[in-house]
Every structure is written in C-alpha cells, then in structure tokens.
Image 1 (cartoon, rainbow, N blue to C red):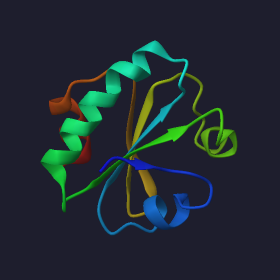
Image 2 (tube, helix red, strand yellow):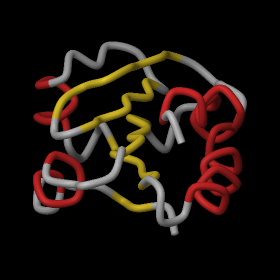
Image 3 (cartoon, rainbow, N blue to C red):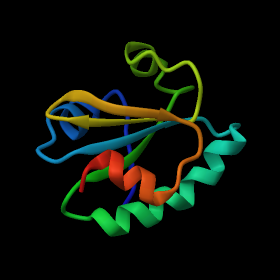
Image 4 (cartoon, rainbow, N blue to C red):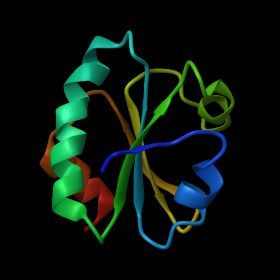
Length: 103
C-alpha cells in the first residue's frame, strides 16, 4: 500500500522508520506526478517488508516540502535512518527508484 504522508504521520512513518522510505513530493495538478503513481504502486509491491513507498501532497503539506527544499515536482527523496539519503526530480523508472532505495 502506497502511504499518504502528512504532517501528522511524517515523523513516525518516515523519520523514525527502521526501513528505507521513498517519498514522492507531488500535487494533484502535476501531470508528471500522475505518471509516477503507477510506478510507485508497482515498486511498493516489489519492496514490501524491505522499504516503504509513499507520497506527500506539497499543496497540503507545504511546511514539510519547504523543510526539505522541494522546489520542483515530482521530487523523490529516499530517507534512511531519519535522514535524506538520495533524491531525484522527475519521472523515474521503477528500476531506478529501487536502486535509490537500495533494496
């Protein structure tokens, strides 16, 4: 299940996670973000138990997006041990995202 990250759950689900977490910073009006959605669904199936995959709406959660310097969407950030490990901007393949996660 692709998570919906919010201000309420970001710390527990992302920063305190004991597995790597891939977060797509997105918005409903973003065309390329719509193309990423099925890729995230497929990736989530592949990495279940090894990592978490989720999305954060930059319009609704702008404070978190600002905190991590998100200026363009889709921005994809991988968090490991509560810290930013890697990031990329734009539509990426499932294989590329899995490599970013390192699982």
